Image (cartoon, rainbow, N blue to C red):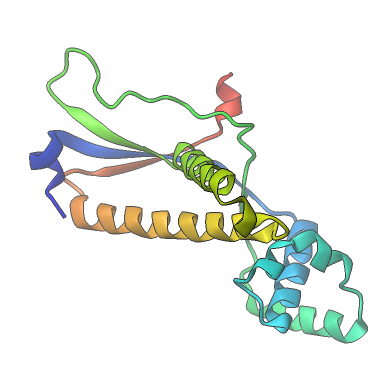
Length: 178
């Protein structure tokens, strides 16, 4: 990868991340039920596994409850979920006027919305592929989000050091700034 400072003249990387909240025990239990059902069916990354609400409604067998208890003991106690952004993202300038330096601003939610819009444009042109398969869009979106996270992590590890092009993470809940 190209050196960030030589390529763009930016002295730091600022990441605007989606604020997360600690999940309640009931939210963790509901998520565990869905994950267990998906794992038992062997469909962790298929379009049938995307419909979590359908799987959670069908979870009732006592043997499955016992399996769920076993899974709970192996999973971490604390989990976090993203706060809803209500289709809002903060616009942060990376080049303040009058200063000799700038910062590369990476916005987690804005990137995700852009990828979602891109997938929706594909759906408009490939109607036959997506009709009758509601999970395909979510599957493509999930894979795109995972790949984007991987590329961003690689970029940061290759370009950001503690004193040279440092990385700053800010957890922002955009609706708080309306």
